Structure formats: structure tokens, C-alpha cells
View 1: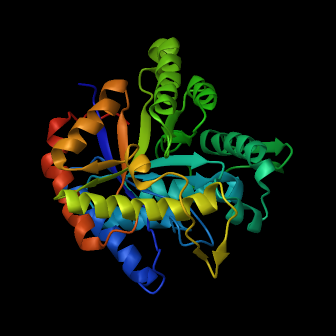
View 2: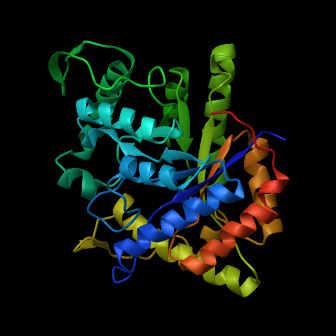
Length: 346
């Protein structure tokens, strides 16, 4: 079998704002500690502002907290939104976070997905690609070089050196979040690890995403041999058909909120994203989710394994209560992970 690593996504979903942010983050910390103890390779933290969907405005700060309470699990950002940051500040924060996580940081970066938050933070969506491209180049220069100067569209500064310097040459491994297969090809060709997801897309999109990565990596030869593809899926282990139906319905409700803020009108009331009716039925959506008994989840994940995915990022936080989610993490560790080999690649 292809080596597959498993990552738990600490999505900090906060659908019920009466639950309390302290409890939400406490739940995420409990899950991270459990993932570390049960043998998951990594956990992932998001970055989103101003909304209660995937709510974490401080991913690097959260990564340091997780590292302080765990021993070996890697902490992945999925993702830091580069256009929202000044790279001269972010570069130093990345170095500090990488140092304080004992080199367990995996730096996933992206251009931003929610127009509601991006535009309220002063970054129009039609500028995010160009801003991301320049920001990434500035960040790489600041992490790899000293006395960097810049004269571009969004950055212009005299020579400077980010301090402290990275403990690891060039800082932590960088992973780019890309959905479009052509974008995946271009980013892989530049030598970056890739994070992607077909979201609620069909098998054809998933296959094109994986093919874009694997074909480009293979073209690179030895230079691409260490590159990895991480793919995110909603996942949950259930205990009965009735439980499966309930969890699928919860995921359907979650996607109604996600659709609103991702591709929809962005209807938000005091930070709470309003749920819309998801365009797919519960049954149609279920085909793109990894929800079932341990045996069913193994069978579904084997498809990604055989296709060439190196790391599965399992999003288990989509509105199901914490006690059931913890039970699902145990079921994943005991009934699913042993069926797959796990290696030590980045």
C-alpha cells in the first residue's frame, strides 16, 4: 500500500454561539492531545476571521499551545491566509512558532476563500491571487535570505533581515492550498507540498487533482520525490445505520453554512454564518463524505490511498457533539489506522 499519514483537522466549528469559545477551543485541545496519544501523524488548524465557521483567527498561536501539550504530533496550518498578513511580521512569527513547536510545524498557506472576511479585512477577492503570489515570494525570500529588499506591487521596502533566523534552513516545510488541477501542477512544479480537497465535488475532480500532482511530481524525478499530497475530507466513524443518518444530516447542515460563506451570499449575523439549504440532498452529499462503520471508512479511504494521496486530513468537527467526536477519534485510531502503513515523510 501507498504510505498514508492521518491528520485530524481541529476546525473549531462554533455553530452554537452559546456554547462558548473557551469550550470550543478546549474541545480542540482535547482532540489534539488524543490524536498525539493515539498515533495520528498530525493535527491541522485553520485560519478564519470574523465568522463562526472554522473559527481560528490565530493559527500559529494555537499551534504553539498544541505543541506545549503534546509530544510528537505535527501541527499543520490549513491554512495561513497570506494576503491578510504583512510578510515582514509573519516571517518572524513563523520562525518563533517553528522554534516553540520543536520543529513540528508544517506551514500550509493559501490565498483566502471567504469573500465576507477577506473584503472586510481590506483584501478584495479579485486581488487575492496576485497578493498571494507576491506575498509567498516575499515570505520565501525573508525565510531563506538575509538583507532582503523588495520593490513590487504590494511590497516595497529597504534591505532588512528577519530575526530570529530559522532554526531549520528556510523555515518549516511549506504546503500550498490549491483546488484547481492546473494550479496544483504549477505549484508542484515549483517544488511545493500540496494541500487540496474536492469538497463536495465528484470523483472526477478528485482524480484530476491527484493526477495533476502525481504526474508533475514524477516529471520532476528525484527533485520531486519528497513532495507530498494532503487531501481533506469530512470523516466520521459511526456505530449504527441510525447514527450514520444523523451524522450525515449534521454534515449536510454544516455544508449549508459553509456554502453560504464560501460560494454563497455571505449572510452573517453578528459573526454567525446563517445556514442555507445545501444544493445537494443528504444522500447525494453522503457520496462525497467518509462517514460509516470502521470497515466502511477503511474501504473508502483505501480509494485515496491507492490513488496516491500521502496524507488524509480528516475533518471530524462539523457540529457533532464532543463526546461522539471523541468516540469517533478512538474508532479511527483502533479500527482504521492499523489498516494503513504510516511513514515518516514530511
